[in-house]
Length: 80
Image 1: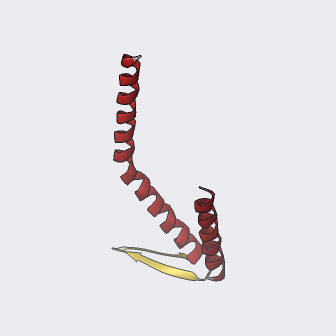
Image 2: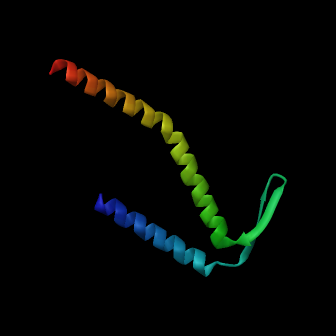
Image 3: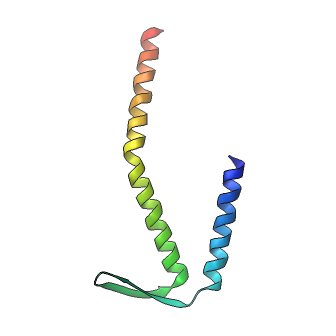
């Protein structure tokens, strides 16, 4: 677990250094919507959108696991 956290911190530090060294404004176009912002803001927004998508896609799995856990706890109480 510590190894995974160390890798995550290292990747975040590398992303921060990259963003700080590339702070020039960029133009983003998405269908008919466009805006201009610094690369740091665009990277943060893209990361947040990816994290939100990952969380939303994990909800069905989390619900399934919680239901199974609840059933196992109920079964364990019946046996005791």
